[in-house]
Length: 349
Ligand code: 5AD
Ligand code: FES
Image (cartoon, rainbow, N blue to C red; front, side, top):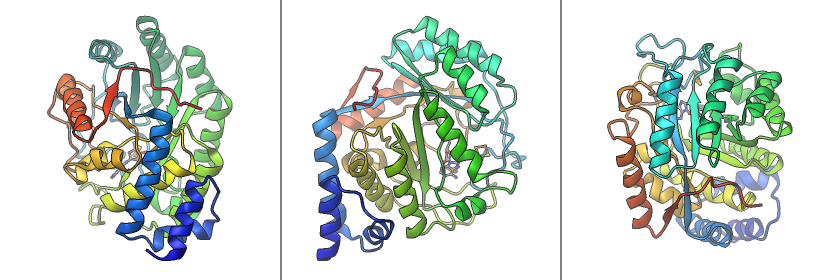
């Protein structure tokens, strides 16, 4: 590690903001020694806020029907090999009930941009879950919607919304998405969600095609400015039925390095060790926690649909029942000295 890199890490850990060029340099000059130092600082600061608690969110994949055609995504409209499904409201509610019994106090309803989920349908679902489990947080991750729609979801009781920005670089955004999708709309959605009072999550894939240290530095700058409550980052993993099928996957090493940086940029942020990270390495999620993450998201979807929610190839946790998935993650967290807590897991500010 160069002296310059060490100074950048010390500066970040001291709570100073870095210039765009400095973030870029921190990424470009990284080595194992720098990664270890960053992770140490990230874990220290996270422990001072969250101790050794890891929050769990029960992920319910409610539909793989999507009107969008993102170039990286396995459930894109253009993938005619994708076996489409949509859970009924009763099925979603029964997943949440099962999750509640297992100790989950946050449910994430995630799906493609499926036109079936009108405001009315989604609001009824949110209302029903909140009525049955008033002590739980409901997180929605259903893509871009109008401000009016987000407002209705909030009024129905949704607490949080996840919408990855995917990249903070306009030109890069254009290379990951078809022309009908817009960077400005994505940013507008995130700001609307924030203004409407949601706890908001943004995020991006590590190693997505055309990503550079410069675009990553822009992502970091965006996170620094936007101060998201949650930030989902995981490696890009190619899916065989997408235009990016021959592109290389992102790495564990860079993902962990960025997790540490993001923890230091915004210490209270809720940062998941993602399923994609667990997919590219058998101990990926454990390593994510050891780099500064503090959230895991076991799958609560019915086993019958899990393989169909295939955003990328070889996704893990597709054969396990919800209880198995939770126990597996519990054991994994304990193996590295952490414990899963039964709690809504709100951000500590
Ligand atoms: N590899 C990794 N992550 C992906 N996502 C979509 N496709 C892939 C892929 N091939 C991520 C996107 C999206 C989230 C739901 O999943 O960042 O926002
Ligand atoms: Fe729907 Fe990517 S194609 S989120």
